[in-house]
Amino acid sequence: MCIAAMKSMTLAQRGKAVLATYGISCEIVNLDPMITKNGCAYGLSFPCSRAEELERILNQKKIAHGEILGGRL
Image 1 (cartoon, rainbow, N blue to C red):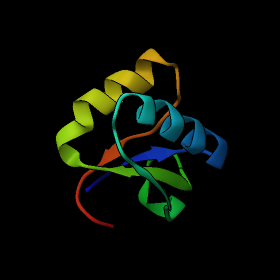
Image 2: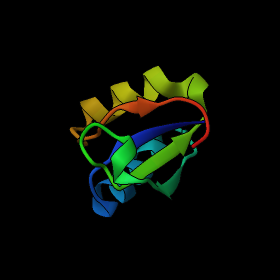
Image 3: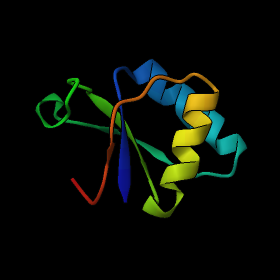
């Protein structure tokens, strides 16, 4: 699984809802802000095989996100 880091719960919820309309299943997870470059506290856990698609959709819908973290945390 991969995780798209998000600054807030609101952004994570918005991202999850938008991604669901594209058939991308994800879950909101808590992150240790120390492990991300921008101190993100939440993330969307999703299949790594959908990383490019997920990033494209989030950017297209102007949903701010941090880095995509690979593997399990």
